[in-house]
Length: 221
Image (cartoon, rainbow, N blue to C red; front, side, top):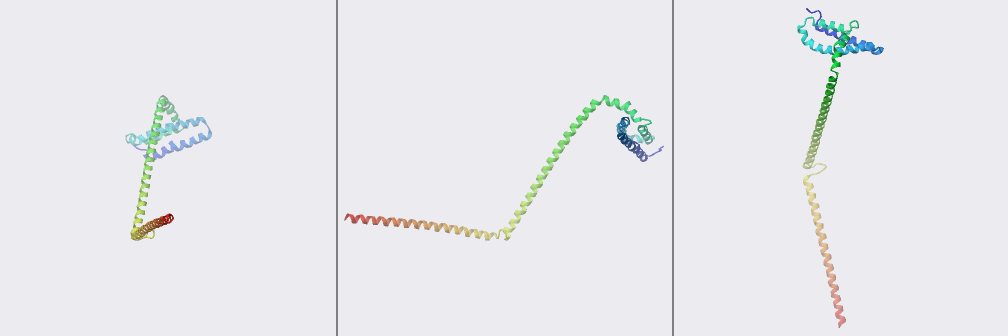
């Protein structure tokens, strides 16, 4: 026999377990009443464990436990209403002694988990940055390679087709040959001029020596 279904039960549980306690907690904070504030803070601690149990109960316990949803709504009414103070009773009778006894162990586990999580997240972040950098370098290399290849192709097309920048390849070769021939001719002319100058100097020296010898001969007569 089912009085309320899963859908209605879910709506009632959200109203009783979250909306109403959230509003009452807001009033407690605004009013600065430490007693009421402690009461609702205690409720939220108990509600955390209730939510964990609810995840398991809705999937497994509800299949074989009669009136499961009705019992869950009744439990929330008992926990949340100030007339019953069910959350405070569960906290003081069960949760507080248990958590106080294992508080040190729980703190150590929490710190260990935080350190491992920080190391794991740090390693994951460094690996991600490294992969992003490697990927960026590869993209840049590919882009530069593509640009260089395009420039080479354009240059080859201009050289083969007589483009405006480089001109015809055969014409360039002919011009280079003419410049080479001019350079060789200039070198030959300069060489011939040097030999002619040496010849003139040698002839002048020989003539001077001949005149000098004739003068000595006349003096001796």
